[in-house]
Image 1: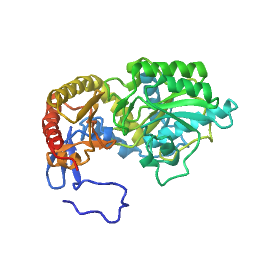
Image 2 (image 1 turned 120 degrees about the vertical axis):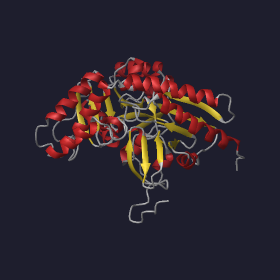
Image 3 (image 1 turned 90 degrees about the vertical axis):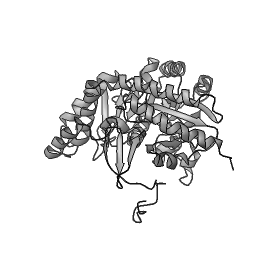
Image 4 (image 1 turned 135 degrees about the horizontal axis):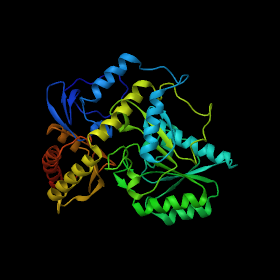
Length: 397
């Protein structure tokens, strides 16, 4: 047991271990115990830990230049923006430090887009069970009253609809003339690993085109190769107007981005938005190298193949188990929903040498590094499934 830190604000329900180092998909704590990392820093450690290609690149960059501010030209920003444009089919990028900041910038783009069209009080469609961050604006867009409680008054200008219900969105289009954008996650992460159906995404894209709305797709958690394509919405064959990114983009170095297409790329002009740390040389180098290594090492194909193996193993072991509601997700973003709250499994998995998370009270979330091997996926199954079965046989209170 590590001692509780007394000078750090009590904002996290921490587990009683402190991690000291990692290698690949494995980490060790300060007591020398080893864990298989099926959480990946919450979908952040794309390349795992201590990647032999990433580490020297970051060491080189730290020795050259860490920060210089956006007063100056940044060649690494141009390089990363060009790569993200190539991968997404969009055109321009703004760089920040986190998913929250990327989503906040997207909301500002939508509002400015509406004002530029002469709409004084623009509205943005958001979703039940969505999660976009914990700033006042992004928690207002989030569909979780627990996240919002105690921080009222919430920011106005949001219209909430259920996921995968095109009729509900069409009703909004008929009744709310001030709507300027639709903002959704391709796969809701914190909301319980809930995917938007391909036909739904295609319908939303059509409606946005008809209404001249911005389609803003939050790919912070589900993007950057996690599902086996660069961005999860690409499975539906569509393209957004605005796409926030973060988490896995820098393999652990904090970096966020908003990538925009022609309809939104020029909405923000000098003075409209900015950041001190965003786009700094270290973060940009981390992202450039992450994308390069992902291509070199075939990590999109790995996420597809290993994700299928992981899902098949979970389905084989949990098929017919009473209390397992559904296994869903894509690639290396999987959720196992149980019929009851299962937060106790965090500690039990940790004690068994496995790092996971539980989200939406009853969904076990697996978002391991994209370097995970099939044999490591089999170990995740072997460690996790007995814990689930044991938990589900216990009497409920």
